[in-house]
Image (tube, rainbow, N blue to C red):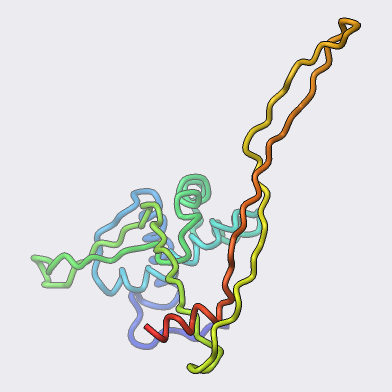
Length: 194
């Protein structure tokens, strides 16, 4: 059983808090964004992100678990049919909390919690520099010569025999290209020499 959060509850008790977070989750999924107090938004974030993770799984058991929490079939349908495909590539961080200032009546800090539905722009992976395994004074290794056969042109020629029968011959012209490959240790030694 999970340990309860420290501090006072948002409602009168744990059951009331659970129902209040479920209702706020339903509003978040149907409207894609809600305005509430900062404390409620911070408490809503893990609940909403867990439900979105269920929706990304998409199986029947996950749908029933989400339905047991939300208790709203329309919200569960929106979550699984509309929101889950939009966040399929995202690995987390499905919600965004933006502070809005203070409420006029009781000066409570307000925040807007919204779903992050933009496509993910993955950063290109940085190439790690190769470490030289050979010592600095190592001599360069001789280059290996590899032959590559490149097909330049494929032609078909029609040849007519003396008897008048036509035959098609395929002629392939090939070019042999020599490519020199140096060992990685020789490259590392040359880079260190510079």
